[in-house]
Length: 537
Image (tube, rainbow, N blue to C red; front, side):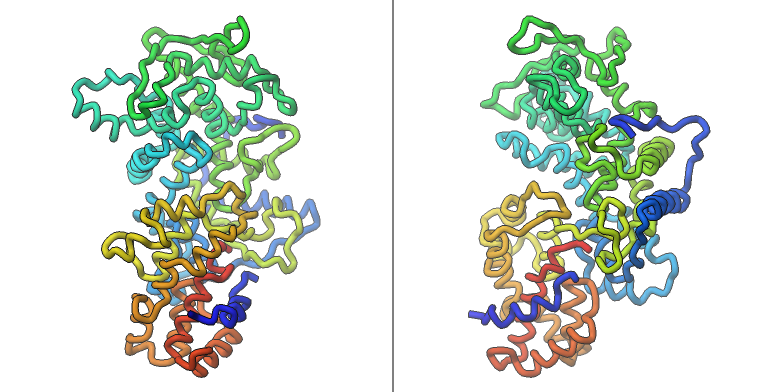
């Protein structure tokens, strides 16, 4: 039994220190900006906001901090030791931009952002009966992101996918189509094929509006009326709710149906857009296709602003409108001109998500330190980078990266984290509805990391792949070199002088067991359980 009480003394070393729809879409005179130009515009608007509040931004983050931050944000994991060393040793003045390009062109971006978009489109609070469809939907997202399909096209396909079980004849062919071409059906299944659920999800995700508050009565705080909710739900009126006992079977649809009866009343709601405009119906064009045309249109200010705000919130932990799905007079954007600029440029670049990611990460605003010294008190001024708790996916994949354990293979790996399902069960255990900037670790989660089988084996001298490599490598022949490697593997940085001095002494003295090798394992355990490992800063 390791003397954990002594190790907690080590942990202290590693603690990290307009209106609702305001903007117009891109006007004919709006210039199409390069990545560098948009990054400059981002910094301009943020700096103007800081000046208006008499505040100043903190300094830029060092290379190691930026490296770890951007890996977690784009790739969903921490970098390897080799990747850290290569980046820190690279003298190129453009290495940060080049790193972002490599990550966006690599497979980890596809895997991570498919999970990011899936968690937003199919949130954890959705109907748990249909959680089995998540992997299929995520695979569909991976294919779209791998091909860099424009965001508006992805959403259009999601909104117009056929829900008719007779669309593909033949049993085997139907099964195959359901898995590949019909993967977006997961969105409808998670919403039980109900028009009211679909309307609430579409408005929340793609228009940034929690419309469900107006389902039973007029919204108490926003201008939305109950009639408007059901008029929007009427775009899905042609879908018949499926049998709840058979979640795989799709639903029949009357694609031309445009109205429904408001429950509990004798009133009829006819499909109408949320901006109050009447649809222009066309023969042979389904009701949902008409909705998709309006929703993803370049001149729809709701759609582009919501997408831009969601991306901003992903990289900064909070949105320019925050919460991201509650715009209104009582929740205006912190920087309305900036949000307009991001939305306009997203439209002008044909909804290329990678373009906006490149611009955000190239800005000084994104590259600032997370230090609180001299930083403005208001986090929505973005004078510093806020600390963000790792998502369950980021934490799991970073633990796998840091320890050298790979999914699959031996029985020990399959039952990682004391579960039979490995990664999936870990994600469920660490699932949280907390905001990234306000995340807290539960007792169960803390115990899993401190005493769970995975961490125990990953830091065991007889089982740990990383410790074996660190101890056996001929070029790591001193305690200081071995400790530095552990830091690079976990925190993506070299130890500070005071950390190295203290920990070298700890190893040389052998820790509580008088064993230098065991002392090194203690340090590895402490690093994996440190707040700095669980935070993106």
